[in-house]
Length: 158
Image (tube, rainbow, N blue to C red):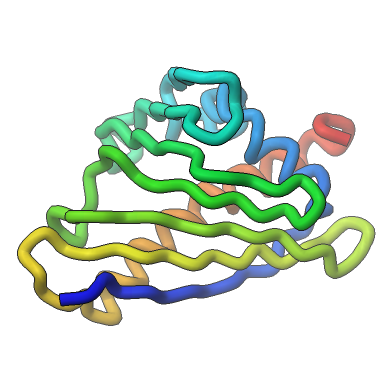
């Protein structure tokens, strides 16, 4: 079976530029997403090929390690592509999992975050709408934490 490909987008109440700066500052995730991300390890210089490992808080119903490899990013268009190397998923064991995120400015202090996910279950079965929603909601849940942090601290990443 071919990988499933799906997308979604959400409005964010901070500028694309500020949000982008946080997304690229992976070591800051333990502070920005306190209570969800306990620790961060970065292997590489932050460019393509860099491996980021987020250790998630067990009390936050995550309790696992989420390891990704940065495939590419473009500062001019706010596009980032990565692949998941390791991560616990409520939808089942994944054979492959990649994502592309893009930020589009909608105003001085707002943007739209667009997410495109491609993944395949190890057993070859198709993803249900509910499973796709769980994946997308996981990514946007973390985005909402980042947004809340930036709204609470308007001078950070300015």
